[in-house]
Amino acid sequence: MNSLDAATTVRDLIIKHPAAFSVLRGHGMCEDCKADPPTVPLQHFANKHCGGDVDGLIQELKMAINPQSV
Image 1 (cartoon, rainbow, N blue to C red):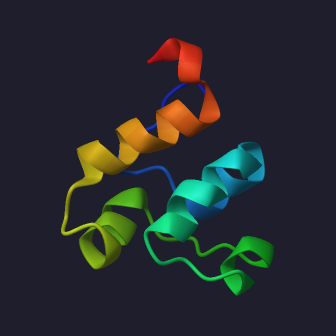
Image 2: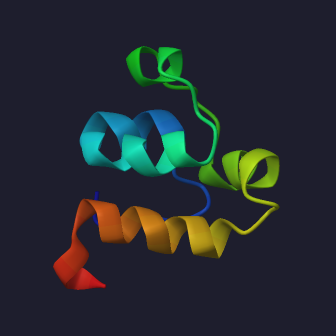
């Protein structure tokens, strides 16, 4: 995944970057969703679990995926 943005789906993110699940779990995602990640965009997840702060969520995810790039 070259870019990570508000339209990236949770499913694509977790499939390509399993380490990202720890961030999503920290914001309320359950273990069941790890096995069958939802196809919703990160914006939807942020609206439900992060008070709408998709930019903050994306920064956390980038740090979890590749800490040297942030």
